[in-house]
Length: 189
Image (tube, rainbow, N blue to C red; front, side):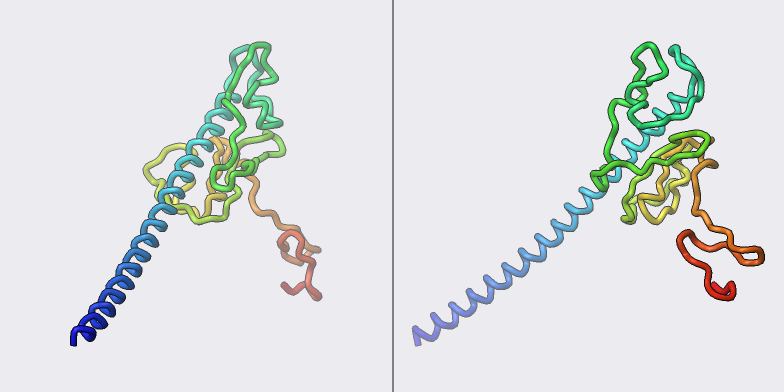
């Protein structure tokens, strides 16, 4: 009878150990998800900071003063680091930043007449922060955007120059088609 109680307690110990392993696995999974969310929030905050740095630099570039001519187009992001228009060393931006979400270069937003007018992330990820109703300036346009690449860090007065999706106009009487899509026979889409 004594050996039977040892087998019984050994089985109980094994089951208790398995339950502990399962509980620890669940807890580690929850910690991992929390850690991923913390990291994504940090990257998102860094994106807002770096994009804001570009936004401020573009606005400073456009203001006359410091021996530079007013409102000449920005040709390269490096020009914001050291303004080539000025005889003095004028820095609108500390350095050329990478997109913290992708760790690659920002997408440069250009206007044919205004040059570089802003930057955007290339990430198609869904942002955590979607409520920008109480924000001012360019940040207000980020409200309810579906992906980080929709956050365009462009001064408010230049947002009308953000290139939008283009369409190729068809033959007379044929509606426009998306770029790269050949017309269908008989003008059907």
